Image (tube, rainbow, N blue to C red; front, side, top):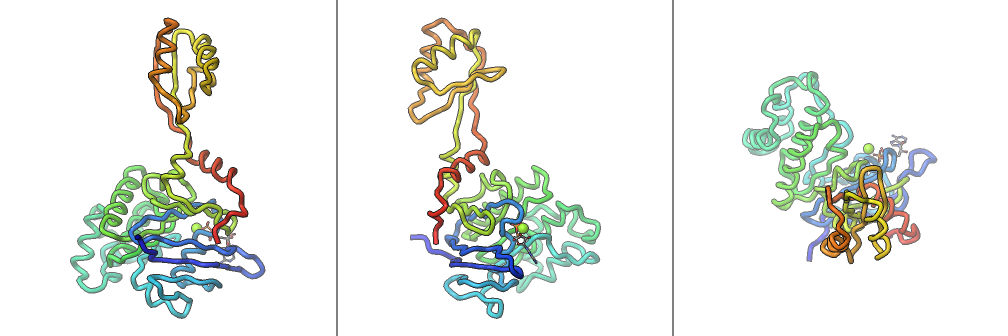
Length: 304
Ligand SMILES: Nc1ncnc2c1ncn2[C@@H]1O[C@H](COP(=O)(O)OP(=O)(O)O)[C@@H](O)[C@H]1O
Ligand SMILES: [Mg+2]
């Protein structure tokens, strides 16, 4: 059975009179990537800062069973983190900052992370001249350089172009395959679609869903887009036999339910001598499917 590397129970946090976290509870399974999803202001960064012991909170946070408090965050030597914007020294180069952070076999660790993150082209430039994407990559490198068993990344895809996003994703997955556990936040669910094993969804400081990415994806609907030489007739025929079908400007959109069989659909069209001009698969929108899951979710079922 997989064990939890991190456990959060009944986390509450106030800024003055304002409560920004309400009884937040969830765990991170050892070796998993857990995605923390929520709109801006939902409380993601505050949760991460609490875990790192850099903000005070009430509740219980345990890393490998030991309790974390603001005064007692020794176990956190084992957690690499990138929170909000990486705090960088503007007049040091990326490589110099990595060397400053690295412990033990500094040279080897720094070289290895520069290679892995593909940042050698700018590692020797002072960070005051970095783009947002470069800063973000260096921030991730700083979180990973000491090869910690757990890594916390707060919106790590911010400012990265698609190529850099893919590189970062591949790196995170490679680290995970070496047993590293991750907590990664984003306000965009689809950014974590190819990454997260588990998904924790937070809204206004409350956990409203705690599930697996595969369960979330299963709730995502798929469609067949169909264009024939007589869409009107095709629509009637398929509608009559119970397909959930709608007509868009260019084509017919047929919902792929669990009983959907493409062969059966094609046979109906062939039997009526309809010619198929185009047929495509279309995936539903993940953010939309999330809303569907949430709407069907009674908030009284929040996991405590
Ligand atoms: N230092 C602070 N003082 C007062 N309010 C804060 C502070 N930091 C965050 N907040 C508030 O706490 C809530 C959660 O913020 P945050 O954790 O940064 O959300 P997220 O990271 O999901 O965007 C927001 O309403 C934000 O305005
Ligand atoms: Mg944040």
